[in-house]
Image (cartoon, rainbow, N blue to C red; front, side, top):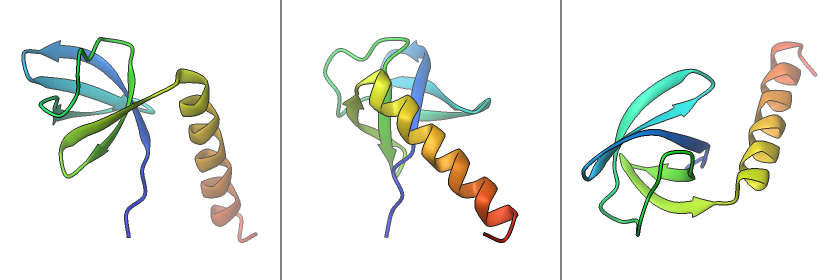
Length: 76
């Protein structure tokens, strides 16, 4: 099973990018995307950005994930 967490592209260097999720940055491949740009939100799997997603949807998903983590930490 895989959990897809939206990540924001903060830097593009050829066919690779630096992505950010809550200030955690990682490198990923852009080979599977057309015209990736800084500011795009993407879904990353196995080190590859595989799909662009709408910013509003990405931010809503991240908010729900944060809420789930908070509830789990509080034993809810």
